Image 1 (cartoon, rainbow, N blue to C red):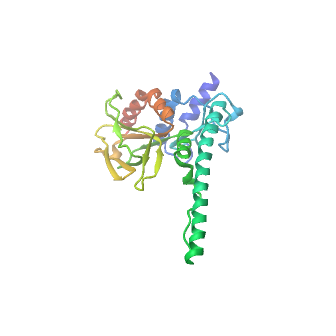
Image 2: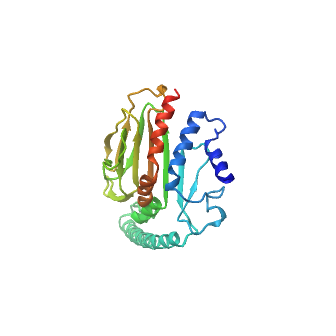
Image 3: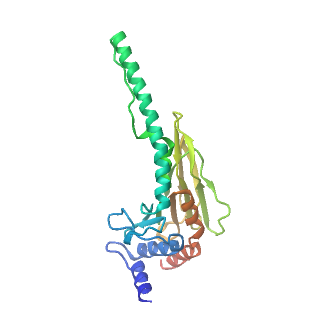
Length: 270
């Protein structure tokens, strides 16, 4: 009981430099997400979980008062290590292929220079040559949750080849959820990329989302509350992105009723 009381005190205590209203919002959102994030915290440097936990697939790094919660794959977990090994094998294959292409270009450029006396540019090997496999392992090894509220406008950029679409099954009034699954897409140059999964949860009355295509491979999501923020907490938006399975799990297991009650309570305070 003492440990639980201490945890609740930590969650609800205002942070230095943070107003009580913001502290309550962040603390409530974190508490509502606790069932979806039953993972250990990281050590201070964020490299491994506390107590060198090897069982958990994920670990959490968050600073008290911060509006972003970062979740990382646990590098000490055997399943995570196996996935990384498989991904690195594919990445290594891609890099070797890129090196062969670069060598062939170099040899052709040398031959052309000897024949004509003119030098030619030669492509080297870069991180882009890791290909989709490199981008996929980056996307699937983390998740990030950003909390925004009391904004005159919300704006998010969503990379990828799929337009964010509504999740019709989200069963709460005064809410809109947009989603993009993790997927492979091609940019304007025809190069394949991997886009991480996104969920954008907009909560509050008179708050809707507009999706516009910026260019191939990039969409913008904007929402403008019709009620001024000075009236209280009339809108709250969460942007969850990263590992496809974990993002879906967070959406399914978060106590959204608790978050919606927060909107009502904070609105009454103003």
